[in-house]
Length: 82
Image (spheres, rainbow, N blue to C red):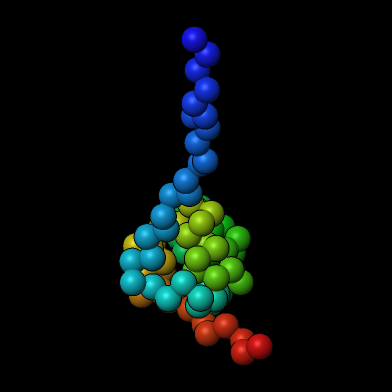
């Protein structure tokens, strides 16, 4: 007896936890340098991305962004109007 069932599955993307952040805001480094070099490098590499894109890189999570914002390492700017 031949099995004719198709069992292919499509990969499901993991949901991104925004932590209440506006995903359309632009992650902008302020120039204030973090003491930890890996954090300073992260601020520089994520500069100019939307919050959604920054979270999708998995280099940062919503809690990290909120901390960086509170400490003045970044700002979250409104995207330019089209």
